[in-house]
Image (cartoon, rainbow, N blue to C red; front, top):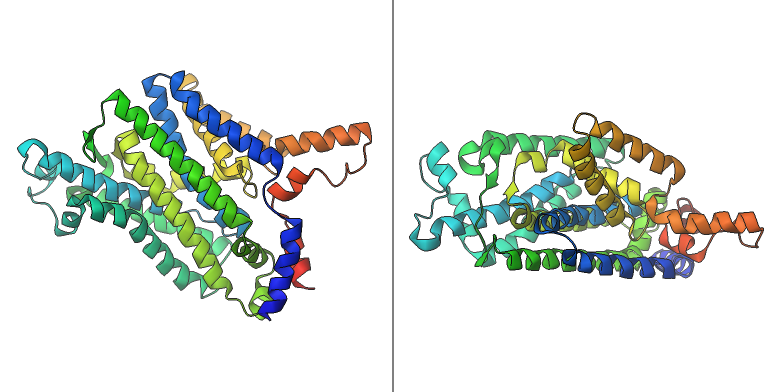
Length: 391
């Protein structure tokens, strides 16, 4: 059976070989623009762009999970928050111990009994913190995925469950004011692994660290999308029962994708804390989780660069519109989303292939109906997986 599935996937590999040339050109252009951005932006806008890039890390994982796997998660804020709070706890403890301090964060003296909870203590170690940031969210995602996908919970039911989970997590953080800062969250950080955060040089270095992580995530996710795992994941999305009949376990495959998306979200949350200088329940609740998803849909969930582009567009539009039109900026953002999706159902990342197809139709050139190679390889075909598995 597995040999049959391998043959099916091998045939599909010839059809979907990887991102097209236009995507690699766009990737290089995006990397160059982002690398040169600090030379023309002021310090405040550099910090904003770094924060937006942290959001895009969540979008990259969602692009694989939802675009490739068809698993619509409305709870990625949980993993973003886990990574963020783990990093914030370490930074709070490090700041409290610096310069002969008491080792107790200030908010614990104000709201609590002045003692550090026992579950905070391991995060005094930078090594433990760096290990916990990826491991803890991955374990949570694995436990949730194994429990849910094994019971064949999918579609809207999983989306509602994940949204309820992030809502409960936010309420838990708000209620634990003495140990998590409550609705105020954790803030007022001064150092980041020995570096002073207020130093402009360190802030610029932090921006480039975030940028490098985003580019590495993009490349790694692109390799996964067009690898054997990505092809099996796509087959699970389109024809789950047939994949199960051929001897594969769809629950394990979806759980692996869910764990990977949680890993990327947790790293994004961990880097968000030193960049933004705060982490609170308002950064990880239901609304942020939905905004993460909107960016992926706007950019193109089935494309290589779409999730990052969409996430950056949504973040920049949200920041710009809220400043220029504080009373009704959300309506303008919604209108922008509707217009883009109506004109480009495949997302912003399919703009260039769409223009090429339009020009070919106008000129009457052959191949106009099939589109360009970039459009065939960058986007994930919606129905071909089922046809291939059935052969």
